[in-house]
Image 1 (cartoon, rainbow, N blue to C red):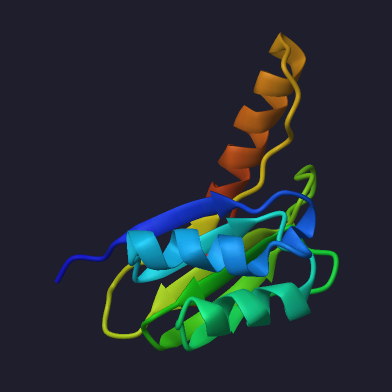
Image 2 (tube, one colour):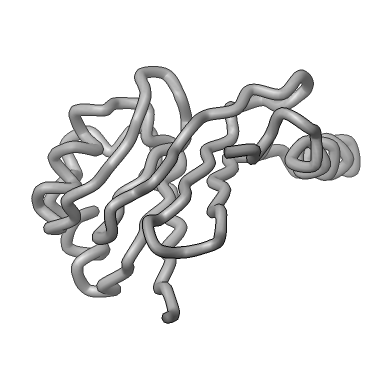
Length: 131
């Protein structure tokens, strides 16, 4: 069984743009959406309702959230040392996979690329992604 996954940066929390964001999501018809800059659970809930995706998760002040057409067995945010934003982990019901949502540091220099690479390597730490 295949999954259609959408990664979507809703910029600055998406406040006031819920209907437009939901319209884009409906047009793509994903099974799971990983959101970046999803800092307001109220916005994420409204987008989920308007996009007709029954399952969602978001935390105040966290940069990642998710929407899902499928029930979710497990979801969690992990905050490894050295990562700018917590990582989101989502495990869809009936699938043997884990989906990670990341919102990496966003600067344009050699220094920031090294930082982004370090953040990605944090996914391999023992406390990340263990259900």
